[in-house]
Image 1 (tube, rainbow, N blue to C red):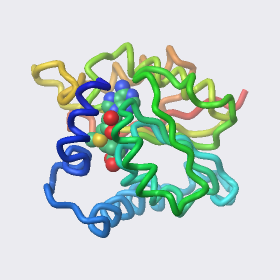
Image 2 (cartoon, helix red, strand yellow; image 1 turned 120 degrees about the horizontal axis):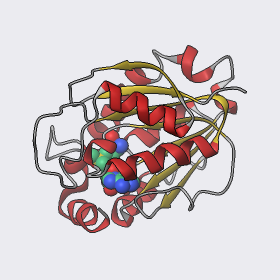
Image 3 (cartoon, helix red, strand yellow; image 1 turned 90 degrees about the vertical axis):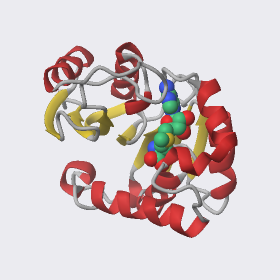
Length: 213
Ligand SMILES: C[S@@+](CC[C@H](N)C(=O)[O-])C[C@H]1O[C@@H](n2cnc3c(N)ncnc32)[C@H](O)[C@@H]1O
């Protein structure tokens, strides 16, 4: 995973982060992140903020890439910790977000969050990442790791591949989840799978809440 994503980053990082363009400028790239966060976070504040002031919230992002969503997250939340398997992606994100002192980037090993200090997080988010991971076990390890780091009651909102037709299992196509597989994974990892959207589609979004008790 690291080798493939480092190579994609060197070739055209922003294109592989969002393949809708090959010629992203700073302006268009980060505007696309603002739009995504407006749609995914700002329309869902009841589940995400849970009455907290977002400026007081500590947030974890898995698979930050070149910082497209990270920049927008850093405008909303007080503290953002962003992880990615690719050192090349992390280097680009660090450079692009030098003006955001509330963001900390980490290159991780591609399957767990041991690189992140044992802080307590109020929200965790991942989009356009697990759809590329070619192993259910690795994704489940991430879900367990997020459970370890979230405060009770907090939400892990993330997107997986939901399109279940036969395809190559590689670091581009990843593995898919059915609704049932997603719920079983939540149960095994100690989460409540409260909502989902897009089962059967590429953008299958899951709302996993860490129980309060
Ligand atoms: C398509 S990009 C999306 C980046 C970002 N989430 C966004 O939407 O702008 C996918 C990112 O996931 C990272 N990634 C892929 N597999 C990973 C893994 N196993 N652990 C952590 N990051 C991973 C890649 O390095 C890449 O930066």
